[in-house]
Length: 138
Image 1 (cartoon, rainbow, N blue to C red):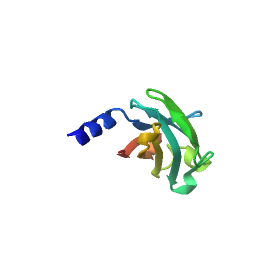
Image 2: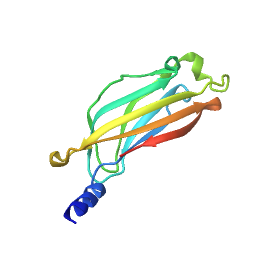
Image 3: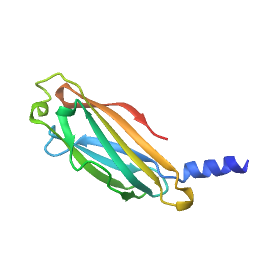
Image 4: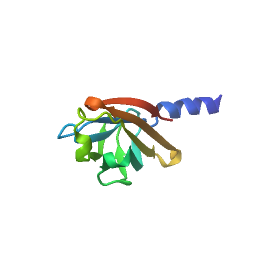
């Protein structure tokens, strides 16, 4: 009973990050990312990765880890993807571009430093339509 009570408490009081994806400025040339903490505890983000399929479609700016804290109810911007010239005209080609973004983070409380991660897979199709294909969270 004690273990179950503790698990319920921790699930209710831990950080929960979502990845918000939207067109940046200028539209259809840049894809912007934000991490939003829906939980009740601060999250320490210790890894951020993005992949683009096909790779020639665009590249993340300043890829790699950037440690930061995201507090409950707050957001933190991540480096955008800038699309290559050939892919910026979303109404002139019918290729599907997939973006996979993953944030790895942990609870700021050292006694509960369990690792968590959130991954989102999106597809960008004709007309620059963004659709979420899959979300993986703990």
